[in-house]
Amino acid sequence: MAIKSVATSAVLGLLFISLVVIYLIIPSNGLVLFLSVLIMLVSLVVAQSRRWREIGVMAAFAALVSLVAATLLGQAVFGTTGSVVVPVLWALVLLGMFSWTQRNMLTVHRDRAVLVANRYSGGVREAEGPIAPPLTPSVEFKLAELPLYELNTDMQIDKINTSARHNVDAIKVHIEYRVKEPRSVLSGIPNRSQAENDTAKELGKPLGEARQDVAYWEKLIDRQIRVEVEDIVRAVIFNNVTAQNAVEIYGNREPLAELVRERLAHTVRQWGIEIIALDFERIDYNIEIAKRMNKAAARDEETLEKKTEAEREATRIRLTGAAQAEAEAKRVMEMVKALKDSGIDLSPDVLREIVIDAIHAATEANLDHNTLRL
Image (cartoon, rainbow, N blue to C red; front, side):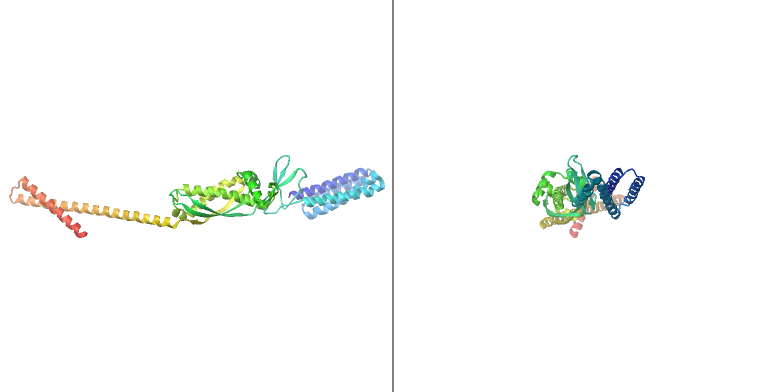
């Protein structure tokens, strides 16, 4: 953790400087040098544990050593008075530094992201939790605090056009999402300046102060999500090839919702937002449209049935007529053959009369059969 590294480095630095001061003030003494090196080695070993208890003990020891160094330094520079005043002043400085550190320590909750900006370089970093080191005075400042927990939005989209001109009265959409890349939220949201100013006005706060409020980011992200969802839903409902009228859209609500979710996820990924779920909770349309569509479908089905029946009847008549014609032709051939075998010579006119009579007889028989069927 960054805060443990900073704390360990500060304690070791204070201890090292104090030992150097003591070594420089006390006349050359091998024992002092040995003890100083030994103390630094032990402190380095303890610091490797990176546990708050060990760091606290080491900090208390470093503070005591620094007070000893301040006493020796005050005595060497200002005499007896300095040996009292300088350590007292140094103790006050240590207390002031400890108090300032406590007040300016950043607390980072697990379900939030704290972004810190550098005034001069313009860089933005994410503070590490659960406790982050104090910001560098006059150089760094807290830019924003964003939610990392799951967010959701319920919205209703009215009067949605379809390609069949059967408008959908309303679709109620439920969206679940969360911030995945906090730094991308700062730069990825479209029309960000106008949206940020409007959201800050809703909260009644200056923009800089509003950005440090989690509620501000909830409202801002919710506002932009709603705009994108409405645009995508209208486009999908009108342009899809699966469902082209209100009734079909109702029946294909799940595939259409999935298509909207995919497009929305692709769009907001650039904002650092992840879409968890998207559902069409309710689809409202005029019931009269369904009734008219059912009547039209019934008429089309009746027309198709009548057409099929007529085709079947025509086929039956054609086959029946062909069979009767074949039978009549065979009867005429047998009649003519029988007459010839009897020695009767038939002229062409007589043959023509026989064939004509046979055709008339077949036609009348077919008409009588169809009349009886009706």
